[in-house]
Image (cartoon, rainbow, N blue to C red; front, side, top):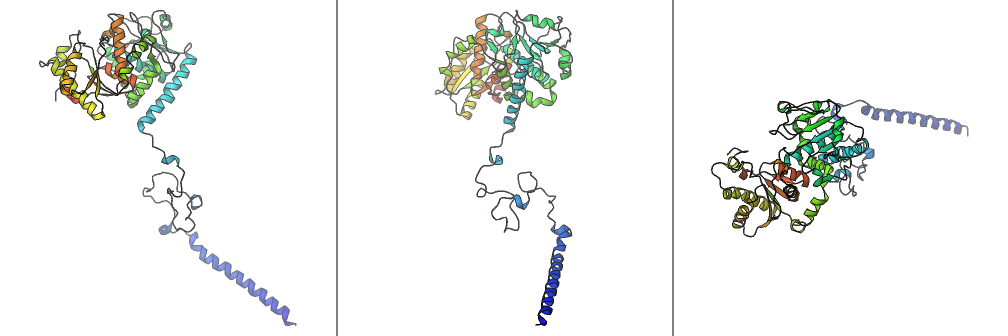
Length: 439
């Protein structure tokens, strides 16, 4: 009986020694992991990761894979079986173009529209003034689009002064997106009289135009025409040899933005929409324009003495038509379209073009509106009907699926209005000696 307490003490002693030995063993086993071993380190490898998502390396505890507890190397990329619901990375990747378009619409067009409505009575102005001797419709609209972009970047109220005899408001009105844009059209011209400074930019200055010039004074008025005297406003004179506001020079570091057709289309349509008379003319032609068609713009320069030097080398109208028809058919074949529309400043060329088209492709179809008698040039100043026809042709051309064009601002602006790709195809170049050198 006396031995029982002794045995109890021995058992307790042995258990204590066992516990100490167990702790020592555990420490001996665990001690290597506390010493960094470069050959077996879990630190990130300097070589590029094979995984597409550049996120920090996740720990094992946050990797939701069912095999992570038993797998020696946890998976960093969820498979379809472990991640049945779509993740943001699985959605379609936006293209650079769509990102650019969205940025412009959201951060420039929409923001500027709101700002313009709230500040049009008190902020500095940018007035675009034209007159009846200004070059063609395309040059005018190109300048308007450029002015809109400058105004939106510089927070200026935009005023458009198309000037008589046929005000722009007869054909276009401010878009609902930009109700603050105003047409000065004669009775509103007093808005310009508030400008007190002056800044003259002649032909030489045009070549060196910088954004600082535009923003250097309180008010700024653009004359896309080579005037020799300045009124009591801040004026930039653009000579007739370079009538378009050179955005690529103003925003040299934003060339991709200011030369992008989708961006320019957003600007135009945020600024202007067809007025009621033009919409009425368009409604009559709605049925004919329902199906996709290739728009062809042939700037021949009739009435301006341009036809000869433009085509040179004895090219006849039929030879010129062959060039345009070949390009139009090539575009139609590429895009699977068999319907065509010819826009031209030389009305007799329509018959020549149609004859060549049907001879080359008997099953082709040509849309014709013989009541449209456009000029495209000199600001359509001769009569109101001629001006309306020119504007109407611009809108019809903008309804094309694709535009095959000679080098002209008219077809480029049609592309802006309709957000349409303008194709200036190589086969036309042989007929365009004035603008293109022969290969």
